[in-house]
Length: 407
Image (cartoon, rainbow, N blue to C red; front, side):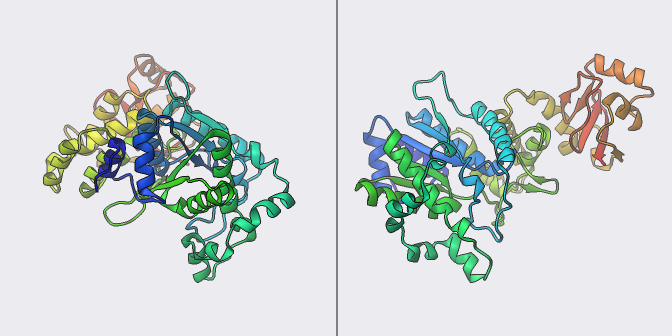
């Protein structure tokens, strides 16, 4: 399908479009309107965002580059409830002190990934606690209750699947879509926001937001969902034997993050390059003919480098690539058969080097650290007192490696 808007054509060809409440209206908006305000929301239910959220961030960045003004919401209020979307069980309730800690951590990363200043159309960063906390419940029921159809709510996949499985769905969770719909209305009325974006699992919530705006104001707003990030086998991407792949470097090291993308299935490479890089599509499509061949690994390294540079711009990619060369190409040594050392989490790095046989004494270890010869997952160690925060690969020089598992 061809669109009038060049940015919409690009998004469609790269695989960003999944569902749109009114595709013609979206095309007209992106083609005609000079000032477009959109919003995306992140509930701070964990300390970090994960790679599924990275697709949302990529879309925000592309639309911002095309001239749109993004509003980024951290759901300080909605995270108190928990989104029932496609979940088998009710979310664990978080106390607000934990939510505030998560907000601080998440917004710190978002500020590095999205432009909130120093550009023509800087993004806004808002917390929906600021307006939802002011709602009078009785007034809310009176003003908005008649505008929501319970019959329609029960048909939404996020609700109907739970009911079909006869799994518990609390009234608290049921209110989530009302509050997210109210978010959209609030932003529409106060910031001129006409477009909401998010993952496919947010589709039901988007529909109710668009509906609420139409019923309340008589005007049109648009919801646009992106596909969930899945692999060639249809499974959700972002899970490894170590757990979720996080954007926070303290939860997933830059080296492990890089490895995740370097290890993707051949069949997923072109799709991921289209979504996460700005390489010309004609160049990306060339990798289709390399599926199952060794040459396709060049594309995987390109993918891993591009995404790691996006999320961790401070990381020295050259070091990661050098360390990874042994892991993937086994050029001069076989890292796959290395002994795994069990190390206590509180052990300082100079002692760790002795315990894993990479230094004869702690004095020698400190000398190696002073000489910038010690790396953890490809990153230079410059502090004797450093302790490890996760399982990792430690190297001394170019040919001496050891695997560490924390206990």
